[in-house]
Amino acid sequence: MGHRIARMASVALAVLVAACTGGEAGMPAPTDSPTPLVTQLKIAFIEDLTPDGAPGRTVPAFQGAKLAIDGAALAGGLPVPVQLVGLDTEGNPVTAAAVAREVAADPSYVAAIGAPFLAGQVTIGRVLDRAGVPMITLSALGPDLSTNGWRTWRRAVANQTQQGTALARYVDGLPESDRGVCLLGDGTEESRGLLRAVASSLRAAIALRAKVAPSASGPPAAVAAVSRVGCGVVVWGGFSEEGALMRRRLVEAGLLKVGFVGGDGLKDQTFLSITRGVGMGTVVACSCADLTTATDLPAQRFIQDYQSEFGLPPGTYAVEAFDVARMVLGAIRSGAATRADVLLRLRSVRQSDGLANVYRFSPDGELAPGSARVRLYRDEGGRWIGM
Image: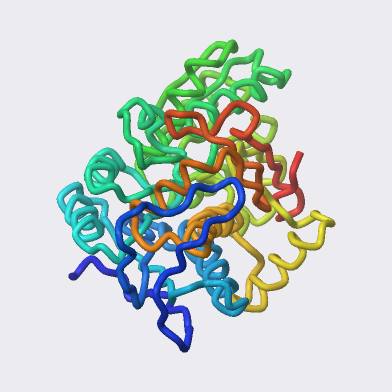
């Protein structure tokens, strides 16, 4: 199909064997139905590569999941080869539905991972749930997805409402917020959802709400509006490229003392590259972990292996994708050879200890209280440093 991405991570395993039937401690045995002879299992990585900069925002997660699969294959613990398949929704509901139906129709797909910032998940989730395909999403978008009653769906990161609440709490603690807060965004689903969540939790007065049209040069009208209303903090709801340009233009307009904060759409190298120092002090709220300063051996090994394989440090949501892939691989390793078996095993695990988090899920598929963590990061000298 035209929407299939050429990226496929094939795991080299020499011998094709039937799936094992033994169970691990704390997990039920696979279903009683005869275990089919399988030669390969697939995990779908569903993403939208249409928006500007989207590949850069999803590649780290794809690579994190690939690293987990490759590592499991090298360790020799998988009964069959596992392939990670990238599928692009192209930002189109019709294509998204076709992608979901393709996964549902192919029994070799035993699970799906939703990429960070994946929008329009309602159709995807509905189709996969009907087909019994387990889906674990890394996208914070769609905080009401858990109300659909799906049995196969989980979210491995804090949702956008939780991000917005954490960001509002931080903004309310800034002295500059006494002068009012300006809510600016780029009109994307990411932007609308985050700003709505911030507005609903913010105690400080909202002085301005505005959508900023993409602009290659020249200060947009929003900069003049921020100056006119005199707000002390700007909350940017969109992605990094336009957010970085907005930050630069605020500084160029002399608004150096206006605080600038945003969500996980800002936390990447693009923002740091475009701002080139003038973004210093920018704070973002992200459902992602940063293992840069971690001292434990597994975290250090992950960073070393990732850099060795891909030539760069792990990006945003890379380690969460690594953890999610390992959840699915754990089910396969213990003998699950069908999507029904994988789902049964995933639902039976009350807690999954990963590198980024200790994952505990509520019955509705969201992370349980205490596991839904939102972290703050600050641009300090061209690096995102945890606060």
